[in-house]
Image (cartoon, rainbow, N blue to C red; front, side, top):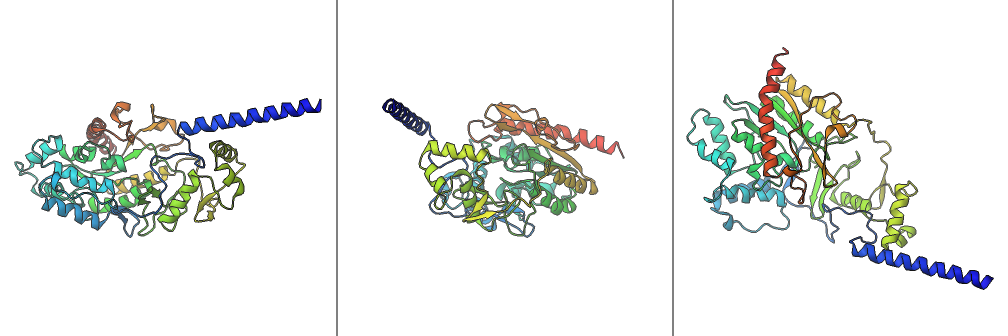
Length: 427
């Protein structure tokens, strides 16, 4: 009887191990890697971390284009005549920043046609707003202004045109437009507005508020439009910008958030180690983690235990665990507080405030709208452009394509006179 029982146990053990081996093989064939809890296409593990050239933060903690990047791009545009003459980009130069050079150079190609290029060609025939025309022409040959933004200069112009301060991130910057001048910011410029584009890729409502504090009193724009992305613009804690500390470290591993849970890391290295701890099982001194990290099945076991709260690795960087328990989290998005303050500043300087929502793609086949997030905007009026999945680079990175940018520009253009007339009718 005992021999038979032992035989059954042995057979069950062999079957169990065989099942684990088959599962391990299948999971590896489908792309799973041992030790990695999750996968991020925006992050990669590197042997040697370094910060890419292209951005820096000013004394207000506002992320902007670095002087070095600005000088390089503008000097190349002055010195070179075509895209073919541009020197290859260095691996240490940020691709998104330095791409502006080739896109603005493309405007000189006789075979290239776009609405913005046609707009530039007509400028020389317009003598009604010479000061603004000079600013736009300067923008076309040096797209980064003295404040470090892809925009005309940040100063008031002697113009009858209505002015718009655009606040936003990579969508407003023009990421994934076939040419960056096809972004909705430049399309609005071509529609006759004085457009101050203060967007920078990867930024957040904390940056939008800092910019509003700095620029609205200076520019007194007619419209202040927050282009609110239904992704990382929804935050539940307060990030307080610090002097000369960027919202993210732009590195060869990816854009590493400097303050992911309301606590700042001291440098890019700490931010990198933290992100690595979020996607990889801790090993070394953690014996259980070391064992689990040797197989995909073990990695799934660790992940399941972590999700159930049985393992709490915490917020880690360079061997230290950061205590986030003292960071206040809010039941409603803290973005609401920041947006309300931007609105108050805009109205203090007689500007019309507007939230133009940019829906986010979720799970590849649907869009996330404000109604899907409890407490979002908390009574603030917002507007959603008539965009669908067809207006996004769905298979690439989830940003607007040229059609999406055109729809967003037309939407803001249609709203401006309506919202402004509604606002002034209440006085």
